[in-house]
Each structure stands twice: as C-alpha cells, then as structure tokens.
Image 1 (cartoon, rainbow, N blue to C red):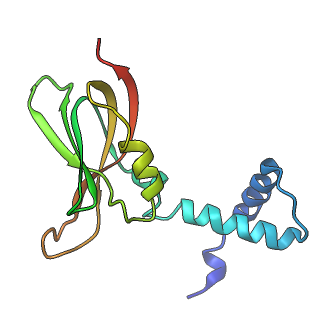
Image 2 (cartoon, rainbow, N blue to C red; image 1 turned 120 degrees about the horizontal axis):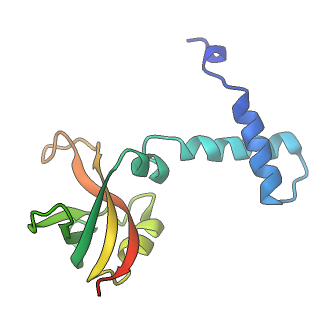
Length: 148
C-alpha cells in the first residue's frame, strides 16, 4: 500500500496551529508538531469520544434514574424520551474501565435525576457472543436543567 496516497499535508498544518494556540513551550518544533498530529489522529479515530458522539442519535429526555452497575462497570440510565410515548427506556454508559473512564464518570456520575437532557446514543461496535452486533450506549449527555 502506498502511504503517500493516504497522507494529508493539511494535518501537519492543523497540528502546527493547534500547537501554537496551546501556548506550550517546545524545544524541537518538528517533534512537537508530530506529537500534536498524533493527538489529532487519536481524536479522529472511530473509538474516540468525539467520533462516538458524532455518530450518535440525539434524544431529548428526562432522567428517571442513574445507577452504577458493578457487574458491568457501566452506568444504567433510565429515562423518558420527549417523543410523546411516555414509556421508560434505558441505556448504559461506556464501561468505567474504558479509555474514556474519566469522561464517563464526569458525564454520568453527577446528579441528573429529574433533569431534562439531550442523550447521545450510539452502537458500540464491540463484538461478543452476548451481543454480536454490539451494544447501545450513551457516550454523552447535555444537561438542560432541572424539570420545574
């Protein structure tokens, strides 16, 4: 495979501008830009939090409960969507032992019960015997405030 056909020079420019905007000090410009470019590549990977959010369906809802399940290492989120059905639904967060564990705790470890939210729901493409087509997960949530 020819690597030149996959390379995009604008990635270097983007990494350079990100480095400049960060205000970080560096001794070796090429090394610093290379490290920044690798960070940007990780952010664009399929398993990155921004990519998962980008591939999600947005659901306006009210949270009924959030419980941490020790067995699955996930938060179980029960909610009622604002779609008029008034039926309680549930979805789980990413695993707390995933690479996004700090974000998972920050997003779902707070008190959102009784809050109107936008839940981002996507399919986690991990294949297993229990779920050959993957799991539905909620990688992100926007808090819109307590229901009055």
